[in-house]
Image (cartoon, rainbow, N blue to C red; front, side, top):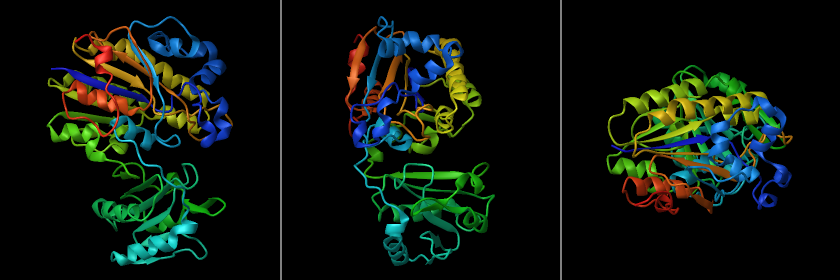
Length: 400
């Protein structure tokens, strides 16, 4: 029974895209991999990935013995959630940046029309308190105006109700994302105490301080114009193919089946190996290594390099040996997050694609116009209907 696996090394870009001026002009020199390598030098030890395509893509080294290539980001900006929607086969629509300072009145009116009780809990602040249980406010972690957060106390509003609230917000705003989340071990009073102003007219909840993460935490991401039912995980679910979502894919991709949003890289990679070894049937594995993104946000090259070293060693010593003859593995990124560039946000970079398996040819798949080609290839491999977008490269990498 064949298996196909996707490993996304979150934020592992290989150089600024040529359209960076439309998004963040200061990203012109972004190159997450190369700049980490320049700083860490001999401390960065990723011989497997370097010989599998990175060296060819970045340093014009001879072609590797596996298939390889790189992809553009078709979604606007550089975003983990949007990137994964694209990878899964549905490119989000062009969104607009909105701050609650400009749209709070419209959202309040729409929520009240849907039967919610909505008040302004803090004088002069454009955040909304809904049913005395959830706060609707700006997201403070992403680019300004990209995301609206719904942060809830699950003791006062169960997660299913929080999702319904989030969907109503989603229907009335055209931001990149609406994220509905919360936990049972905080309180609405504490959440409100964590509201702060980050930039001019940007007000939101400082979520790391709000005690929503940890045991009982749940999150629901809603993209703008995303066709979830035409993405690989949901197509697979409709055809009874088991899909494991491990790491951040459990949070950012909708699906049916085993899901575990592990963050710690060591624990995640161990879980992937164990689950893969124990799965006797045909299955897909969608994995996101999130801590590389966290290291990028922290502008911590030491941490980032250590995570790359660990991942490289795991690939060559632990995971590749587990693969059967018919199995395929794709290793890639979703955008960049250059920790040396002078800011802590994602960077709009090309992403590498490295493809492994006994059946995989030594071939370049070139530049892909969208990461959705990966989702399309997964559907092709499992003989499923096509994704909303993307072109399969399965025929390019296999001798059929």
